[in-house]
Image (cartoon, rainbow over the protein chains, first blue to last red):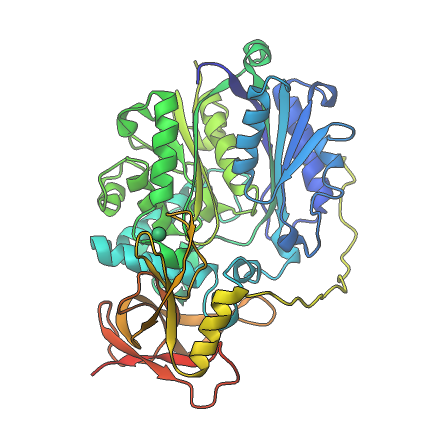
Length: 380
Length: 153
Ligand SMILES: [Zn+2]
């Protein structure tokens, strides 16, 4: 893609365990601040895509009363019942259609008001796995981690290194929920065991929060103060978790290939300066390294050991702290886009990586990262 | 968030909404459940690519076609992976500690191409171990007909 759509504004709320605000107010804050960031007014927005989830809200039409604080009153509006990163893809498509100039994308959820692990059971096959009562998001991820570790000889220490890195990075991000400066691999391995090998610090924290991103057409973005161009997008869906090989993230690999083709990326490890990966569980980040072509298949554990993905390494991954640092469901993948854009603009503050020109953002949805979307963003 | 914004939430109310749903499991799952009641493990097979689905699926997504064949599957298989559950999701939707860790396995039945998730009762569990179904002596229906898996030797 050549200067057809750009991210021109973004905002995230503080990520909290129990925010003293309704989802409407979190949405309003993110939307208003994203417009300020874009230098635009609500009137300039022509289409709004929200990402919320009925089962996280205990109701149907989960965008009722969050549409208005998104700025969508009497505008073209639609909702994605997945992560906001998928909503961003739909917003890009609406702009590429030529019918819309500026799009607002918002993802929001409040973990403090729903039963944390029940939604992860509701997404399972209702005719069998849901009723059998053994699978949930965490146990499913644990089975995936075991498949991956067995196939490629990845160690508990290598997986814990992801948590140690991301939660230490989170300490530099004032918005992150789980800030653990100097966290060691041993401390991660000492945290509460949930489903082996997944421990508390290998898994996402329940989080309240919202993220908003403003996207614009090439014509409008060229006039913006800090356009971050969408160079490529790739989306891919995979089979249900018991019907696919779990040791690889095939759909992420295919999504990345489609994205890289549009963006002219042939050597991801050298052409990408920074990546924000949606890792709900620590082992997923290692699997993503492989699927994204940062290293060869099965070498994710060795890549983290090399230090390249540390914040001061050659290819920093999750300088923000990633989903392990804060995971407001529906906002998490969208926040990866906001963070990647922020790094390209140079506004990331204490977790800014110097000289980021090309950044990758990833979003996922479904048990064991069933669906994946990949974006390449760049400054010029 | 700005200090001058009076945006704070005043409180929360419980939502007294607890609808119960019935789910149409589809003809294939119904036949699978009927089989389980007789201790038979029935799987569907794609006539185009030969893929065998357990639990049975009505559609082979790769071939974009309906599965038409039925095959009876042996009650033996191989553990692809397992996890030791130290917690379970409690009725409140939070993770509660279990008194003893319990094993959950991904099992590939012989002659099937997809995986079943079930409990595994074994002293020295390992990936790749051969297992067989332990049938529930007093099942309340089809869903609990398969109690768990145990090592073959
Ligand atoms: Zn087929």
